[in-house]
Picture 1 (cartoon, rainbow, N blue to C red):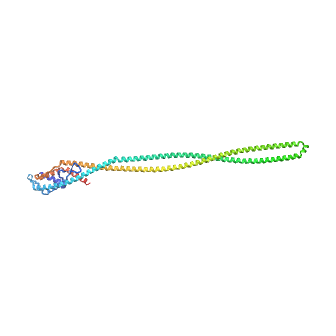
Picture 2 (picture 1 turned 60 degrees about the horizontal axis):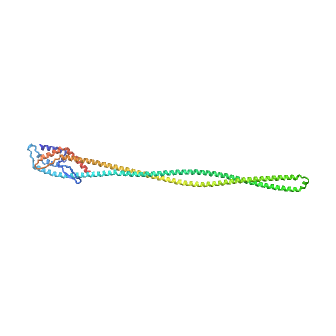
Picture 3 (picture 1 turned 90 degrees about the horizontal axis):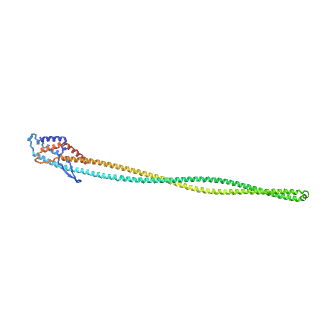
Length: 443
């Protein structure tokens, strides 16, 4: 009855999962790995289906008698099946060794990935600890240096603007002074024109007075000649009629004397008046000429002084214009230089910002890679933990089969198929776990 129930279970199991999918509860074997000190529990893929097929194909119907207690075991067939089972066990051992090697390589790959992950974590930590701060310090130092240069250039520009304003004020003052001196020069020239006019008037007056003096001198000479002629004629007349007058007219001599006295007094008076008038006019003209000469001399001195001042101011204005132009050129050069330096500094700042952005992107990429590696590590840790739990659970429920010639094959087969038919959930878990391990090993 037990053999019949075992065969029924085996047949239903075979219909469900197929002969090649059956698992054998082989003894668990362990192998020491070269890279670690802990023992790693390994999986085994049984192949008990072949023995079952051979058992069923070699006359299983003859072995299982349905007559109840009268069933007898054919020990020759059992011996053959036992030999076949032992051969199958040896093949299973080889397959188990191969699977152990694969699983060992898988564990080595996992450890290598963990080592790479730890190295990447260390590198990422060093990059976070050193590179950002050092780059930030370099950027901050360069930015401080650029700001210091900008402040220095701004101070120089302000100082040059103050100097330019001062020079502009000095230039305006000099222009105002030049205008005042020009007005003074114009006034001096106008005064000089007036003085020249006065001198011309004085010269004309002097010439007029000289002509008058000459006419007066001519008149005086004429009067002298007339007086001499009158005296001469009076003398002749006096000599001619002296006797007659003395004899006939004693009063005529007195009349002539009186007339001569009157003419002489008139002539002397006119001469004195003419001399006084001439002297006064000559003195006035001399004073006017002296005054005009002094004024002309002062005007000439003022004009020369004004000319010298104008020349000096013109030279100063030319010098200030040259200085102003030089300062303007220097200011334009400084502005161009300042603009170029500001442009270069802005380009440097932009380049540094781009480098910062690139470093941030690199850090983000490293973080993503680290996160991916961390996720892979977590998945591997979960799978390893699952393997460990499954191995521990399988070890707790695995059975050790000791095949001897005295044991009955039907009881062995029934126990074998009874155990694996009852542990169907564990078998499915082992199959999914083994397929996952093969996929990871292929990756």
